[in-house]
Length: 175
Image (cartoon, rainbow, N blue to C red; front, side, top):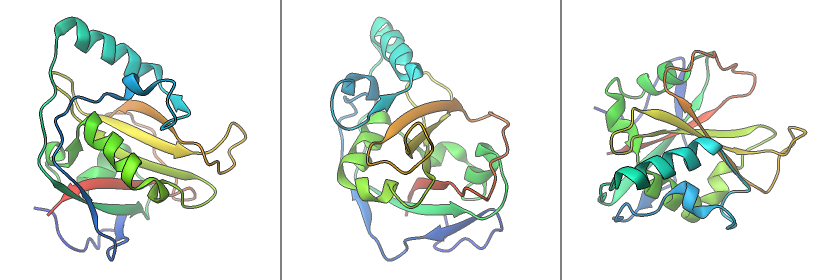
């Protein structure tokens, strides 16, 4: 079960006073389907490959109910998996759909900008696909904060240890 306050040394809940809620969604929207629109300046090729594969298989995403979210910030060095596991060991409970991710960015875009190295991670679970980490970042090619957002995808098992020098945020369903 998720807790209201996490005292673990790897992550700390932040923005507790802010209500982050998205309504019920039909699950139709896909990140790759947004290419050429203004939501993301860069979309990782992994989304386009998955989009094509799901279209060939006629994979349908699940509708989702109204969902509340909370934000945690990294306070210790950790891998993707260890960051999310400190919020809830059952990682599937922390996963979102592409449609939910798109809605979060559309409604709460300002939450994705928070300093010189703005990186927010969410867990993604789509039909027939293992959990993966979606990273939304606000930076340009020189590493400076940008007004444009990019999105890319990594496996949850990616073993890179993320430094606390550039703390990441994770956004997860809650309550």
